[in-house]
Image (tube, rainbow, N blue to C red; front, side, top):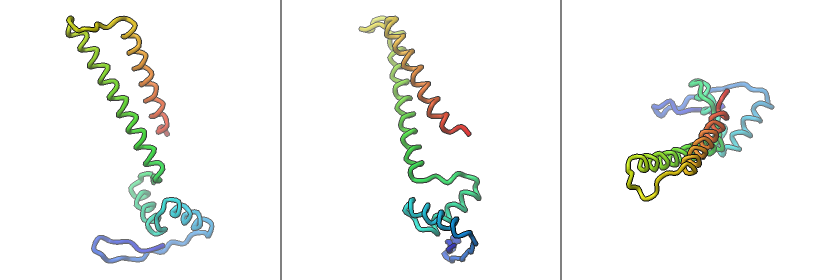
Length: 125
């Protein structure tokens, strides 16, 4: 299977017996990830040991995109909230909110909530 760094610089070899087909699948997966088989096996063992999922590069990239979408939704909600508070606290504001503007903001917030719900639904077991 390969050797791994124990932290003291000494490497110890570990051997695992696998069916040829399974070994071929793991080697192909490592190749797709652009890493050596030994590194792929180390990551898989560590992930299983920690009971954490093994994420592929594409999955990390997808999570980064989702995080950015959530951040942007938060910024939009903050802007809307700030504008609404300005309107409510300053009666001399040049542009007072009207029913249409408030309805538009409410509809936007509802749509953003739905977007977040859709994103989070992807992570439900």
